Picture (cartoon, rainbow, N blue to C red):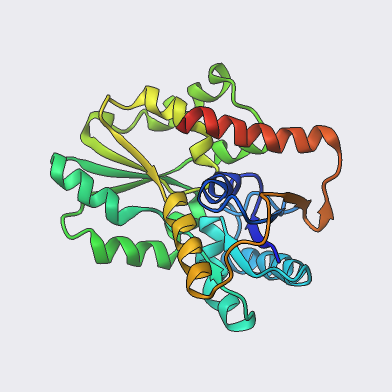
Length: 260
């Protein structure tokens, strides 16, 4: 049985990369809902409908667990999905708690970079309200990074001007930690590092999600049974075109380069 990974597009590859390193002896199905990307600019009800349709498809593939590798989809649908399906469902949320802890130690603020949907969602705002007693957390939506990632556009001369323009109203020296609250954003970590002072932590929830997946599979005695094989689907259609598969492999290689 395989582990299902779901995202609105290619962003969930950043979480899959983490899982492949923690759980190399598993097989995976990666579902990118490219027909409806981006989720971050849609309504919660729209996203919930797209997510349920995708998970119904993955359930038909007899998966043993599902990772919702999308902050917007987790916020919009994870609770309801767990009521409908019997396999473990692991979501992701912005790494606000460790970010606050790190920045408090430095006497600095936290900047959460995400999508409009995640930043306005009740789940995210409740998380910040519960953890941010000192009012350290600011948010910034960067939907353009989702669009760049979906076009496989990673040229610094194209992407950096966009990020610089969006960050222009912030004093970057005030921030000790930057949270990447959209799974597409770690693909641009190398560029973001250029725009914040040395020593600024840039973190995301991908590792924690992969570790949670491993913990749950271990507890339920569902570990292993594969060899690291990945099947890719685009909104229900299996991706078999060599050029498209090379692009997905290229994202994993890019993350190898970014994280070392």
